[in-house]
Image 1 (cartoon, rainbow, N blue to C red):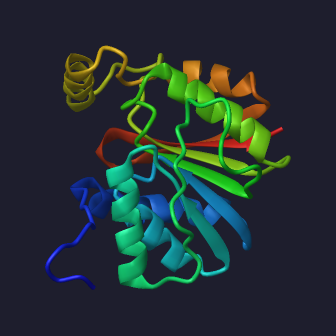
Image 2: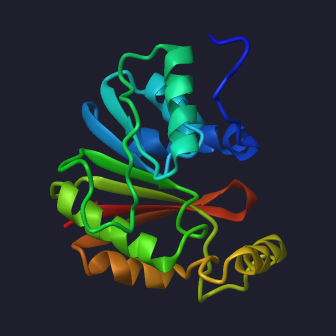
Length: 203
């Protein structure tokens, strides 16, 4: 591990949510194959999950160069053989630097990005995944059948102040977007701190 300079970044939320997310992933991920993580951020999730699934190859990605440096630093620090070097991947892009995956994960991106990123995510997942393969999303969402929690209402307002293109998305809107690319919602799991796991499957 480097001592003078360490590119590893830390996201406090990762420490809080990784075990609840892992519990859901154990029910949906295949035994083998390649898992593409879109918008990997610091890389802490990639390392934690790859360690829990030694039979899977983990492919992190992020459009941000600093994030990719952090991912690479975590990979070097933990020395896991089943984690690949991060790809430069913008979810909104028409073309991705990968052409297939056994599963796709996207954690805490949909609300902190323009809607075009969600559209691109669904387009890419529809192209890369085989029939029955999962796309897993995690984060806070709006739902038509219940009022938004006060904490999420405040979070949504803060996001929109930071960038008017950001904000909590309605689950029904995300489901409709996914359906346009051959993906169906197969499960919704209530998560701590008013978050949701949305599990899609390729038709």
